[in-house]
Structure formats: C-alpha cells, structure tokens
Image (cartoon, rainbow, N blue to C red):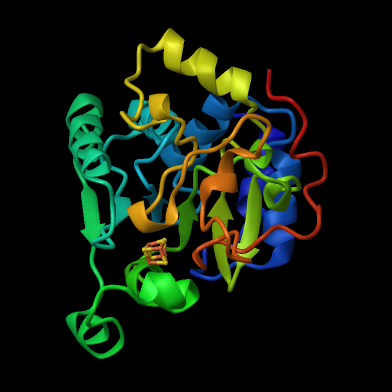
Length: 258
Ligand code: SF4
C-alpha cells in the first residue's frame, strides 16, 4: 500500500461512529481509484470496521455482490425480507447466494408485533407506503445495522435524479455508507454482467429495471429513470433506508473509474 494511503488510513477514525470529515477524507483518498482496488483496500484492511452489504437482490444487485465475493465471500449480506417480494426475487437471492458462495446472507424480517398492530391486513402499502416501509424495512435494518460500523450499498448515480450526486462515501445518521458503484454507468454494469456471465434477475427482461416489493414495483417505460417504476403515483422515491442525495460534496467521487 502506498505510504500516502497508509498515512490517510491512520487518520480515519476506527470508532463505531463516523463524521462528515471521515467521508470527505475517504472520497479524496479513493478519488480516481478503480472500484475493485478500493474494495480490496477497504475490506482487506478492515479500514471501516465491521461492515455489512445491504442488498435487495434486485436488478443489477449481483454486480456489487460479485465484486465483494471475490474479495471476501463471508462479508455479511443483509436482505430485507419484507414479506412483499416477488417470488422471483427470493429464488434469485438463493441462486446468487449459491453461485457466489456467499456464506453469511441474513434475511431481516419485521417484528411480529409491528405487523399485528400496524399492518394486520397487509395492505398498509396501499394507503401509507412510508409507514409500511418503516415497519418492514427501516426498523429491521436499523436493528441489524446496530452491530456494524458501516454499510455498503449498491446505489448508482444514474438510477434517478435524486441519486445524481451520489458520492462513494457518505454519512447517514452517524454511520458510514459506502457506494462502490456510485460512478458506474449503465454500460459498465452491462459489460460487467457480460464479462462474468452473471445471471439477470428474471423480471428484468419484462421491463422491471429497479425491483423492490411487488406491490410497489412497476414496469419502467422507455425514456424513464430506471427507478421510475418504484412507488408509481406516490411522491416517494426512497424507502427510508436511503435518503435522496441533495448535495454533492464528493470531491470528484463521481469521476469515471475506468
Ligand atoms: S416497498 Fe411497498 S410493500 Fe415494501 S415495505 Fe415499502 S411500502 Fe411496503
């Protein structure tokens, strides 16, 4: 490892909580660096502490999982088992887990009491999607992430206008979030699929370009953002486990990697 990088690593807090200064420092450290090199450094050096990947096992999710599995297939993968997924997603999760040899995929389920008290009919998504996401996604993930210092997400800037300024490293509620694919475009994603012969989510060919829970996912029309099919008809762009990116302080983190 370069001496400059070692010095920079020494300055990064190893405490379980991070600051905006840590994210800025990391964005500067890895500016212009290849994604694979960045992941190898971060994971092998354990420079972010205890890390988990949060994956939807939706369209394109396998790219990040493949990249990580080649460095360390034992990195915990957190999957929000909301009870509302397409059966195809659950099958795809199992297929990808076996294919990549992921040894620690954890399915996070909602609290039984929350379902009983706040969504007994299972239809809360139809009149209060924020409340439904709170029960089925936000709370279970927050509980699971309490055991980790940082999370890795598969978000990409090109997916929607609300993610256009996505940096590689950011801080959310005191926890570090790493977005290794922030600066990848659609062509790079497609090339990676082809190069490694990775299987596509079975619903992608039907026009589902961003795949979440079945009731809140629809087919994307030509010319729309890939995420336009999520919560169609609602003023809602994220489920609450991510917040829309409103400013860019990435110090060039969106520069092309290749
Ligand atoms: S995406 Fe839809 S079904 Fe899934 S948790 Fe959110 S509101 Fe509920």
